[in-house]
Each structure stands twice: as structure tokens, then as C-alpha cells.
Image (tube, rainbow, N blue to C red; front, side):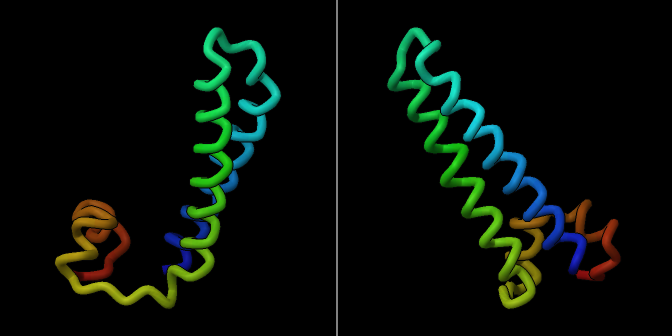
Length: 82
């Protein structure tokens, strides 16, 4: 399970940093509102993934929900034995 935490946090931090970089380039977009939307999406969803990774051990899901969230191939690879 720790692997899932670290993976969520890594992707969250990556998305957050891309969102910050998009904020610097916001004025260079043809449509500046599009740049602002991309910046906000990256920052907010990056923070969400970081928070989700931090509390992932506390999340309780049924086997059916686990398949839909994580995917059957990932569960089989991690040996969770659905």
C-alpha cells in the first residue's frame, strides 16, 4: 500500500509543479483565460492528489471499488489478491 501513497504523492507534486510553470507562461497564451484555467487546474488537482496520497492508508474500499479505482492489472501486480 505504501507504493500507492508514494505514487499518488509523486504525481500530485509533478502536476502541481507543471501548474506553477503554466502560471509563468500564462501571458504568452493567445487566450489568457485558457492559460489561467490550465494553471488553476494543475495547482488545485496537484494539491488534491497530494492530500489523497497522504490519507490513502485510511481510505477503506470494497474489492469492487478497488478494481474501478486502481484497476485489475495494478491490483494483480501489487499482489493484493482481490
